[in-house]
Length: 319
Ligand SMILES: NC(=O)c1ccc[n+]([C@@H]2O[C@H](COP(=O)([O-])OP(=O)(O)OC[C@H]3O[C@@H](n4cnc5c(N)ncnc54)[C@H](OP(=O)(O)O)[C@@H]3O)[C@@H](O)[C@H]2O)c1
Figure 1 (cartoon, rainbow, N blue to C red):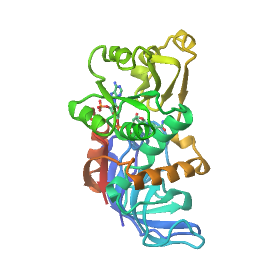
Figure 2 (cartoon, rainbow, N blue to C red; figure 1 turned 120 degrees about the horizontal axis):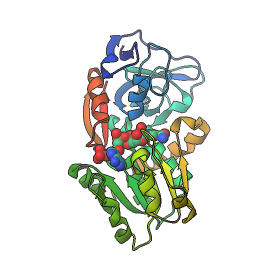
Figure 3 (cartoon, rainbow, N blue to C red; figure 1 turned 60 degrees about the vertical axis):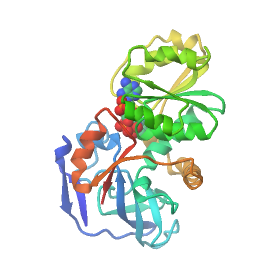
Figure 4 (spheres, rainbow, N blue to C red; figure 1 turned 90 degrees about the horizontal axis):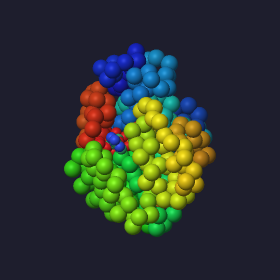
């Protein structure tokens, strides 16, 4: 089988398509014929060696979708031939095959394409955890998805709207902002415009937002604290540097800031989220948005693009 290999940490060009031996499942494992791979910013941090550093060489990737090719003894999640999406793998997902443990394989509803299947795990589990489990957002509350045009942001907009929340999203491009409204936000703001957060008071009738899901905390956290309603909650999902805040801004509102990392979650914690996502995929409240589909060999281009401004849903590699 062919797979992307990284032999040294570095820029996107360190990813090369190589021929590897076919994979075979051990006990309680499955081999999945990968059709589509979701590209996440975290794949680029690992490739650069700035976050997790797997032993070299390695095959990148967490998210994918495909068809179960073979199962080992005691693997009961699904049978050979099942359409599935993945939440990680033993082997890496940027390849034609992926070796998976049982908890990494989830059924994919018929009406969801493989490309959409590759866009489920990291974005939607992250958005679900931040919105429902950490912020404990409730119907009727104002939610600001600060960075709503990318993978996690679109997921958060769809989940919040379906749960009866009042959703305000932000985007840096006109095309991206149109998408945020299409996907269910009641209002959208331009996070590149000066003083764009001044509009929050008007949009919320002077109340402020109850919840901020923050994709770039090093730029926004200080401003987020000032637009919160009483008892407001901020969840830090993304941050790429340092920032200074005034802790008094939390005191005057009884506000809280929590952070999250998907990798901190156990399979026991993510399993119920995948069940909720399956229901949403079936009933149409969850609709992963694909910006472009490109070949596995073009993984370096995907890694450059995912870090550039102008997000519009997910970039997918077709295996
Ligand atoms: N904590 C976790 O476990 C976890 C899990 C998943 C992702 N993340 C992190 O969360 C972030 C978003 O992930 P993603 O998959 O959605 O990435 P993505 O698809 O690349 O989207 C990035 C988002 O950030 C927005 N953005 C850019 N400048 C911004 C600004 N000044 N203020 C607010 N938003 C801004 C982009 O908007 P425009 O392009 O429209 O400007 C876009 O909506 C990344 O940093 C990622 O590493 C963390």
